[in-house]
Amino acid sequence: MTVQDKMVVTIHFTIKDENNELLEVTDLSTPFSYLHGKGTILRGVEQALEGKTVGEEITVILPPQNAFGFRNEELKKVFPLKEFEGDNNEPLQIGESIRLSEEDENDWIVYDIDNDNVYVDGNPRWAGKTLNIAAGIVNIRSASKSEQWQGRILEEPIPDCGPECQCK
Image (tube, rainbow, N blue to C red):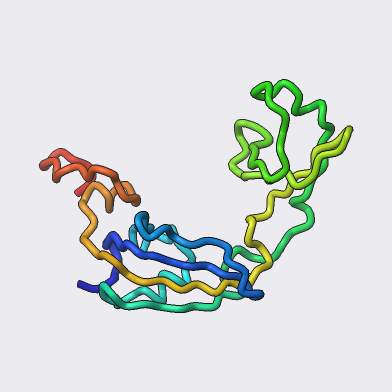
C-alpha cells in the first residue's frame, strides 16, 4: 500500500530549524496520523510522502514561504493589562496562547507583560523559519467513507451507513 489521497498515514517526525534547533518531535509511543490529500500538513511534506510505503523515510527542507510564511510585524499587538484582568481569574503567563475575542480564530502568544501592558504575537510560532523535516512512515490504511466525507480522521470510524448516508 502506498501513500496517496484518501489514505490515513501515520508517521514519526522530527522538525528542526535552520540552526538545527529541535522544534518538535513525535514521541515513539505516539506517532502522528493525518488524512492524505486534505492539506492538513505542510504541502511540501505531503508531496514528499506521496507514493511512499511503510518503512520509508523522507527529509525535506522548507523555506519560510513553503512552510509558515514570513513574520508579519502587524500581527504583534499591545493591549492594556486591565483588559485581561478577570479572565479565568488567573494572571496571564508569557508563552500562553490566547484568543482576543470569541470570533477570533487566531492564536495569539503572550510574549511580554509589564505593569501596564500585554504584548501578543499572532504569527505562527515557526513563521520566518526554514524547517528541516524528517519523517518515517509507520502505517498506511484506507480512510473510511465517513472519514473521507468529514475530511478528518475519526477515533472510531463510523461503519458504512447505508444508502441514505451523506458520506458516500
